[in-house]
Length: 253
Image 1 (tube, rainbow, N blue to C red):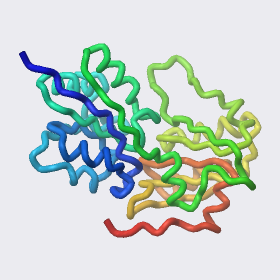
Image 2 (cartoon, rainbow, N blue to C red; image 1 turned 120 degrees about the vertical axis):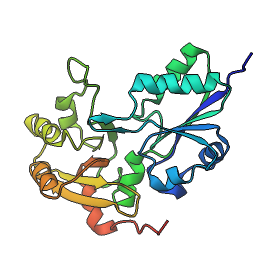
Image 3 (tube, rainbow, N blue to C red; image 1 turned 180 degrees about the vertical axis):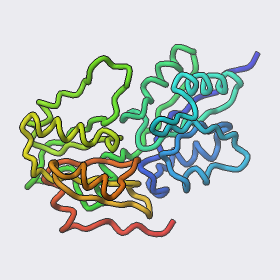
């Protein structure tokens, strides 16, 4: 009788390989199987040992290598073969990473698992762009929202009226596709159209790019500059600090 292996739901951080935790590194190096997304980035994915079985479960807008239920099936199947499995995700597995759903599936299947938190891009990516998400002179609150909700939902769970009144920093994950809609909703419910906005593409990586605007023009600027995912959106007066603090110098990897 085969004894089940164990699954590790591992956050790889925002992309800079040096922001990978020591525990994540150890587990990747010792795994039998790594089921990975694309968000960890090429350098981290290339660092997976050559003898490890690698399964691409990457998701891109409108193009999923594996659907979520297929990913769940794969990690359960490999664990039932007695293998130790690393489910490698960008950022933190429980921060809009669907790690909670995968954990529930593993419990239902009777598979032992462990969560390995990662540095979330919600904080690290703005930091590398010279934008602290909180600052005593600008924001004492911060909220994180997804810009890409479950498409099967009948209505949005985001309360744009409350968000428009929120006197703090709003950080949006996966918000490029819905950027125009999101900023329109905020303005509609009374958010100042001159509120600063930053779009940070490929954050913490050598090709990171920062695009700055305000609510009323950021969507048109994003189209003009061809802003693409993966990107983090930061909304609030902390964005003004980008000019003063500058971008973090990212060393060659």
